[in-house]
Image (cartoon, rainbow, N blue to C red; front, side, top):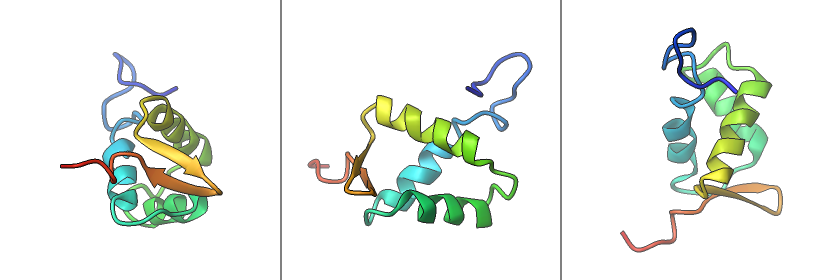
Length: 81
């Protein structure tokens, strides 16, 4: 897992992907592939599938996203703000 360390900078880690993924899921549920392709065409042109899956794993572990019927769902969307 690519977390910030002495060798890996913050920008090279998976953490900057977290807000980008959550912003894509803020308005609507999306498939895993559509989120990956949106990120790949935007800011992270060299994004690998392995790195993307690691970011999704972390967000699921933190309870921020859920996988429902092949769609990614932002778990914080339905809560009162």
